[in-house]
Length: 221
Image (cartoon, rainbow, N blue to C red):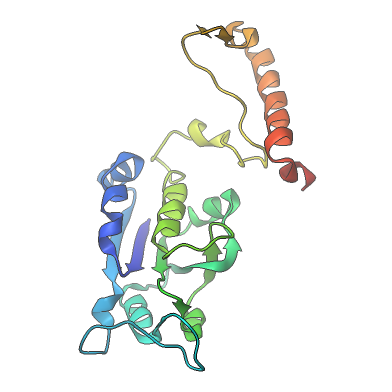
């Protein structure tokens, strides 16, 4: 997979690209990530990319030409263009799975008051990571990128994510490791039994109970 990120702040991505699973995926050549500063496509002598809104109002609005022309410089026939936006569709695990099958993802990270409305004509999907507003689209792009890359074949073992929370519309079951008894808090006996059939049934039951306790809205679906 190829990923292109259009942003005003390329250095924000330095950490996430140089650590953990994403770094290993890049080293294995399972994903190729490029970052473009769309300020480089400004038509103005001072490289300004925003301006005051027509009709008045507070804040600054991103101009269309830097973003659209940066987009055109990296877009291919296989591209899926994602606009990071609080007005977008809420991001879910199913969307991460769908995106993991794409060949080329392009993330547009906005900033300031918002986008010139005409930019929307050039994107395939608008995605939000929650009903709140951040200073820019960089953090949402990182979150989505991390969620998608871990699903790519060869990045992590398939067993590591098939039973993750939300994979079957349920939260994950409780997990434990050594020691078996810590300050009187004990690992459930069934997990020490060696009876894999009973353990599997217990985990399925616990996933339901965990979902009911923490996210009952998932069960209502």
